[in-house]
Image (tube, rainbow, N blue to C red; front, side):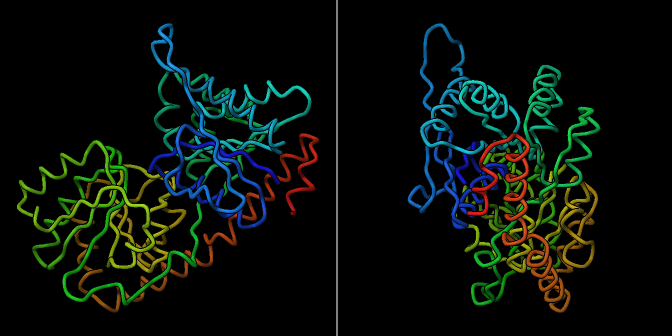
Length: 378
């Protein structure tokens, strides 16, 4: 099958999931064309079956802002015609699904279905902005297929927009062969707590620093901060104010998380909300139990007290207490690490989730009367 994928090529979860999906589809024999303004962060264009098409946006004095959505639509249509794509799969509703709709209308010789995957902030933030509400609702309803990554996101979308169109829940996934425990990589001595995010306010990275200060009263621990974003400076200042700056390492953006995560003893994810919690899943696959917040789609992933912990948002004392337990009780840490790995393997591995996308592609294409349904079994 020939699939066009569009995503934001940044360190956010939607771009990572879209990229990993494309790579997995290519390994399963499909032809995948990424269409975006930059090469997605985890994408190696030299991978067999993977093609990258850059969207170039020209700047004219007439436009105060470059018309990216129009340039994207034009590029989508061009790639679809030139490479005879069977469908478009866009990640994040605005503006990608609107661009896909325009591209679909530009293809006059045949039907080109498109699928929109809702990842989180396209609904909770962009969709909640009054000025974007009508266009977001319209883009979802006009999509030929709609998926989302958690039961929480399904409920949120239906309740907020009043969507009656069927929405398929296909959870995020992890390559369990790539993300796996490595006890030899975990150095003895000081305990390591990991945080991974784009450092936006919703991720509450300052809570990670506050929790470390709480943990260090009882445990010789350090905090590893992977990622970057607007709250990094505030986190650095808070670490200095709390006297823990020597015990916090800011790594910046990292491309090979499967090498970093197994070196850790616990993951801290204190987010205000999470549509799913991809960072937690990748950590669990590596046998690193998460201490997260009881919010959003995290209960889809974590079983409280079995493969991780979930505590109230902003409750530093409770989150710090659970981190201390994981860092001091080796039997508990070992038991939860094994359970976390088992959860990833039995519920969220690529070999379980990617076929769900393939079947959904087949169904959507068949409904639209295209010939792609036969190609999906390639």
